Image (spheres, rainbow, N blue to C red):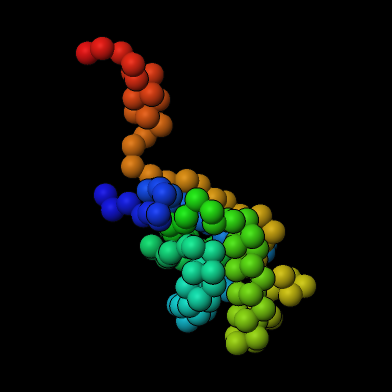
Length: 133
């Protein structure tokens, strides 16, 4: 397992983000999501975020990324959704015909932490600290 770090700490913070098209409109194809991914990769370094994996269906995307402890995730997600919505509608005008009132992304999102050990293993490890074996 490769840890990230800076001068004073080491960390590995991975997240699974799911973004859904407003009203689940089926507007995503390979060319649109390739561009959406490029926009993500362009904005991400400003927030100390690194893309690990990307995939999509016609109405949503799944994104796996790493972040630093100082990353402001909600600000990043909102900045990404705003920029990508504006740019994708501009660069792919045919998308607007399928959208409802020009809304691209749903207001909500799903953000899950991911990582190495399951929660139960970590809980048992913490509970066992200070015990003599």
